[in-house]
Length: 575
Image 1: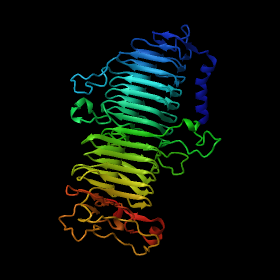
Image 2: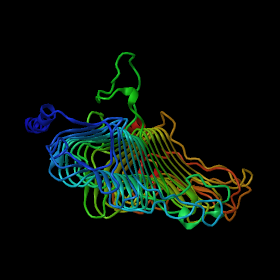
Image 3: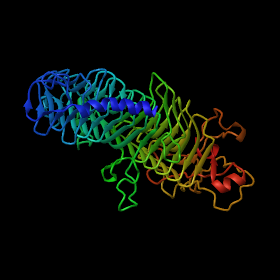
Image 4: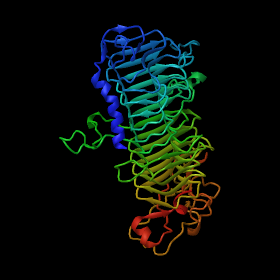
């Protein structure tokens, strides 16, 4: 297989070395084609900094032969629906590079204005439609690299759109900005190599997505940049939100959608630690460590910042190589979902739940942050929905959810929903949920699937909210057993760990750390039993204070297992 791939690569490298490339170093207003660029003959094409290709409509540069294109200048089409900066016809190849100095602009002169004079802009984000910066119309062979800037304005548009399988690697370490409803920053089909998403990818508009993988990636998906999506006109609420119109509060899509298989796993990476003054590539990924960024994936709106899964097919995520854990999803950077405005949910990482099964090899490892925030609504940081399956969730970073404000709202740090499957949850970092107002519920970990058989904690698992002042009720805290305590005789948690002061009656109690009345026995663990959890609930009568729950609570495991590993059964630590 390696010999075949090398031979294929060489076939496309030969034309590059034998043909003298044609250079555009002046302004051209006519469209160009690689098949005729050299006095009617095919040739590789390079647009230097002083050069540009700016037709009034259609496609600026068409790749219709096996020839490469490198852009260091400007490719631009303005006010033309259905226009494209660079289009590669099906069956072509050679490589597409938008270099660091290169600009591809497919935009329009439309600008939103304040038509009703209320102090904020009105109207759609974009007026035109069907515009693309770089597009492949079918199968393409060769590497595709964007290190420059791509700007696209238009509905149903895209910064980069792979319309067919790519034989080669895809690398994005520049800037791509797309504005328009139902648009996508980077859209990827099948890729035989690795996919790297670094730099900045931003999508603004209703149902707009920063990056989505619709096909299968034979290599790894590495995210090491900032991906952001929103349908809001303002991601920071103004002082008077009552002046905002409906077109200011549209819901965007996810910042990252993975709806295809990724054989080499998914890693949201950060630069390696600097342990050497002489080694400039300590992680041996072929990139200078000084140029590597950190994954920061953000969604402003109800859509999850990261969504893995599909409604129409099964998705399998393989293990990330060279990590030692063999996990399929590793979060070293950050994921954040923020509802921003009142009543809008916040969601961080969502796996499955769309209809198709999702399998993540090895487990999910969080060394960075997964967060969700909401104002007057529910917030869920990490959710495994129906059809999602992974052996383990291991957290050494921070998984947090903060929401609340209504009796129906729930802040949940980790949710394993009905129909999902997770065997083990290990935590050496922080898992916390906060109900920000008097109403609402906060839950650190909840298992509705009945599949979690082990929670192992050496960090902090907490849920907090408001409660009556200390004179009315004491703080309820569940703690890990002291080191050295014998666990030879398995002990079940008390039926109600809630503690009250003598001044508190049953009707006055407003906050509790509790579990479900019936916990599954050891023989029934893994069955579809009623969920159990340590949670903190606050009600309207709770003006102040906090309630926390920390695992391990009581161990149901034999001493030889629990005292050494400090394990907590699902019955005691999760819902």
